[in-house]
Length: 231
Image 1 (cartoon, rainbow, N blue to C red):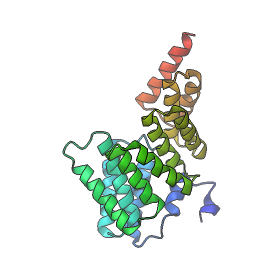
Image 2 (tube, rainbow, N blue to C red):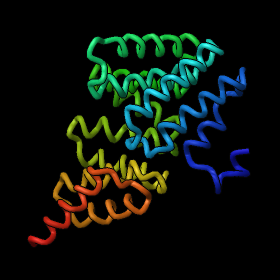
Image 3 (cartoon, helix red, strand yellow):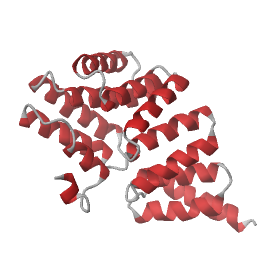
């Protein structure tokens, strides 16, 4: 099916279609809605409201089918994101993310998605960057053409201050999923942070063309134009 539709499917849609055959169609529908609610929004464009909505969808999915490993994996990842961005003052989300990951490990310990969820937990909840990077490289070795994994790897590298490697990974994410504005915007902002304003402006303009009109993107364009105007 994927091969027949590959000219029309986004990488996110392909990932959903190639997931394990659903045991329960209602649970799978909720999982599909959850993935699209966040990961079809350019990854970095989703708001807290989107992510809380996603958590609700996934919690319903695992209530219907407690053995739905992909839903547990994504539930852990989504809660980890909120923990990482200081949306968990009492530690409740951290404990819930850990539990969801433990369920994913029980159900599907060796799948790429479970290793990716564990990577995110190390990166965003435990702030263990080197172990997270090594795990993400295992994930990328299994699925080298999945843009989402290159994008996550680039973020870990950015936190480690390994800028050349980060740009290489982010550039690959952009090439693998050229219509996703999230990686385009982050790649451009990284170029801007490195003082490469002309290159950054080209990609920021492209991100806007793809629908990324958030304040950070528009401010980034203004900074690049101002800097280029001084030279």
